[in-house]
Image (tube, rainbow, N blue to C red; front, side, top):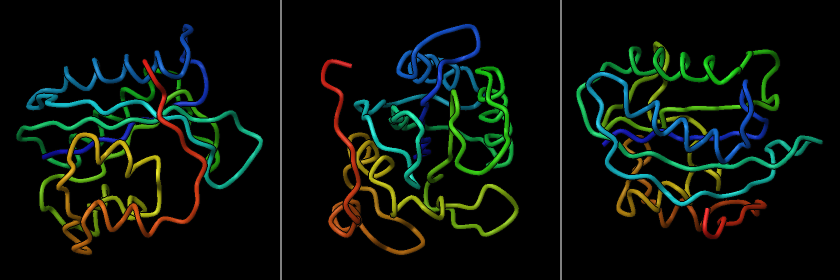
Length: 165
């Protein structure tokens, strides 16, 4: 299973709210050759990490199946981000779209990019809660931690499920 985190906290180039951009991104991910979207999580609103004056983020998770090289998938996701108007400036800057590969099956790799599984996945409620929606039995292949244990170990973070979103 391929897990892709989606987040946005600024309007997309050409307009659209962050949640509209996230939904748009799901459609764009579904067009990546060799990939088939199998599930999409609920949407969540979370405070920026680290804390800042940015607007809150909308976050979700896509589960997919397929045969695609990690570097090829990363390049495709970065092209979708650019299409949405993302410009890479400083780390943790507000953005119209953020797409991260959280995991690709049991693949563990430290280099080249992408590092798999995502090195900060277990530290972020905005990754783990949507991940639990699409893969409740997921276990981090690097640490062996199950999703429930990872969520229980989280530091307190501001996040809420968006109802009807």
